[in-house]
Image 1 (cartoon, rainbow, N blue to C red):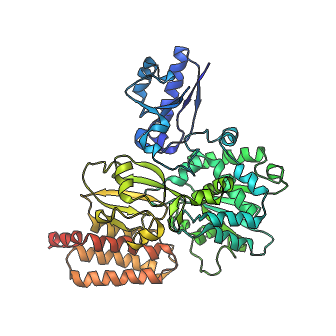
Image 2: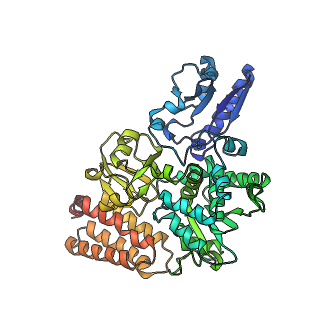
Image 3: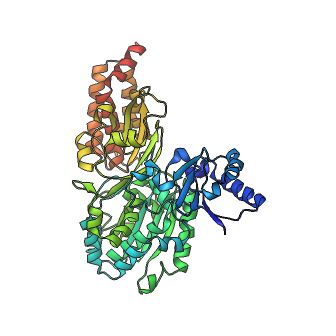
Amino acid sequence: MSVRIYIPRDASALSLGAEAVAAAIAAEAQRRGIELRVTRNGSRGLFWLEPLVEVEAATGRVAYGPVHLEDVPGLFDAGFVEGARHPLRLGPTEGIPYLKRQERLTFARVGVTDPLSLDDYLAHDGCRGLRNALAMAPADIVKAVTDSGLRGRGGAAFPTGIKWKTVLGTESAQKYIVCNADEGDSGTFSDRMIMEGDPFVLIEGMTIAGLAVGATRGYIYLRCEYPHAHRALNAAIATAYARRCLGADVLGSGRRFDLEVRLGAGAYICGEETSLLESLEGKRGQIRFKPPLPAIKGLFGQPTVINNVISYATVPLILDRGAEFYKEYGMGRSRGTLPFQLAGNIKYGGLVEKAFGVTLRELLYDYGGGSYSGRPIRAVQVGGPLGAYIPAAQFDAPMDYEEFARIGGMVGHGGLVVFDDTVDMAAQARFAMEFCAAESCGKCTPCRIGSTRGVEVIDRLVAGQQPDKQEALLRDLCETLTHGSLCALGGLTPAPVLSALNHFHEDFSRRAKVAA
């Protein structure tokens, strides 16, 4: 009887040697006459343990990691194919504390199934939400999503159901479903993990969206830096067509939905929905004036639903288990779960899916284990390069859209980038302005010119050239960017700058004294 072994095909695991380990395990098994079935699953998101190798035992899956090439012969000698003891043995995978304490709803299958096997997907509750949706009226699908409290997981947190209702109510011969998979925020990787580790759930979610609003065509706008996700999506889409989960007769219903992947060229601004639409139409990625909203006049001038990967990937669960089930998780107006991503100077970097309400301190210490350097954590940038720098005094703030906003923060896409007490926050503030200048689409003056002037003002401030005057000028410039920019790139750039200035003012004055 063959033994089933799981080794991730996720880009993070591959970067840490998973491909070589998989080949070594297969070769060693053949040399010893041991029959193995190797399944390339997605990563569980415990990146400090990658490559993570799992063995399917009678009592469940047993994990070993991190496994390197030189470990392979010793694992076989110890009898790891029977789940035997070894220094790398972590015990039952689901019992690893990092995983055990999570609420994995959207990521329930990631790391569990073969991401390219539709049979595996169906065996783990796949397409149940889609089958339910096919039996419902479009308005009832929209109502279920609305009642669940699901808000856009791309960062803006706009109620998903309201967006869908607008598209449903707009008359048009053609409507579109667009997935924003242009994941470009620093420290974020949850979209990539879904696309590489459970691509069928994204396909299912987008198909349900099409049924809900009357759209028959969808596009996944994927950043070109994700080649593994690109291959996984194309393979999954081909399988979905072959098995009638996509096409002219979705699951024998007579309903049509077509889907394809389009690659973006890597411009950060194309993460903004109207710039994305311009790029998808083959134009230069620039902001569109709003109104009209994309829900009314979007792709090719037609009503369009635009959501990000995690939003669509969450929809099948809601249609399967019900709005009330999903709404039970979270707090306030922030319902359900969010995949938080721990990156930067953190001991245990990875993905943690938790219900809204978990605190920043819990994520950093209970899951992240503190800084990788062992030094005190001084600041965390939450929500990508446009997110505020949160000081240690505010680490007990709950991760809830409204509560976190009250301390000047932004939950955003759930990315956390950690800095220890050696960080120069004046340099981080300068980087924020520099990033905006580099990534601006150039359409509006506050963003295009203001960010460039911002870098110059910060340079003068830290150089000690009339610091009071420069600080006043910087704050005034930030106000102009906030209220005068056409989109969130310019509008949110002041958040990291002002948070650094307000919470870590000593870094600006210390640099000035050194310069003097």
